[in-house]
Image (cartoon, rainbow, N blue to C red; front, side, top):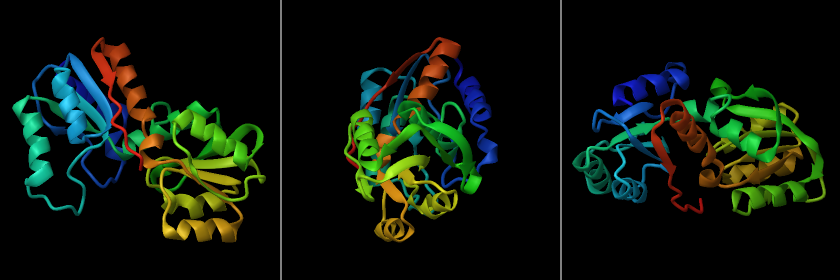
Length: 248
C-alpha cells in the first residue's frame, strides 16, 4: 500500500486528533512511498531498527516512537544513529502512543484484557485510557499474579495479601501508576499496570486495594501486534512483530 494511504488509514482508525499526547502520533519519519513489508515492535530502539533493515522492511510501526515533549531536540548521539538508520535505508517510522493504548479493539488495554479473559465494564481516567471490569470468576490475588506471570512471561510485583479475593479489576498498561487513585475510586479490588513508583506501595497499603506491576514492556506488546495483524489482513502486506527483550 502507499505510505500516505497507510498514514491516513491509521490516523483515522486510531482517532489521532482526539488525543492530547506527549509526542506526535502518526508518521514520524518519512521513508519510501510504498509499503510492502512492515516490522512492528514496542519501541523504536536501535535493535528494532537493525532488525527492520535486516528484514528489508519498508516501514516500522511502534507504540513508543520519538520526539517526546520536553526532551532535548538536538540530533546527536543515540538519536542521530537511530535517525541515520531510518533515513539511510529509506524506512518510514509510524508511532502511536495514547491512541494505541485507548483503541477499543486493537489497543493495548483491550488486548491485555482479552489475553487475560477479563470482562470490560467501563473506562476511566484522562481521555478514557484506563479500563475497569470483572474477572470471569473471583480468584485470590496470588492466583491472579501467577496467571499474569504465565501469560506475560514476567513475574509481577505484587502489592497486597496473596489470599485476598479479587473480582472487580482495573487496568492500564505502561507507566500508568498515576491512575491508581482513580482506579481505587472506581471500587476495584486490584489495579494492574506496567510500572510502580515509590508512592504506589503506600497507596496500596492504605487503601486496601491490591496493585500488580507487570512490566511496562510486557504489558504493551499486544496492541501493536493486533494493529499489525489488522493491516496485514486489510491490505495484504507482510507484517512481522519483532520482540526486543526488555525487563522493565
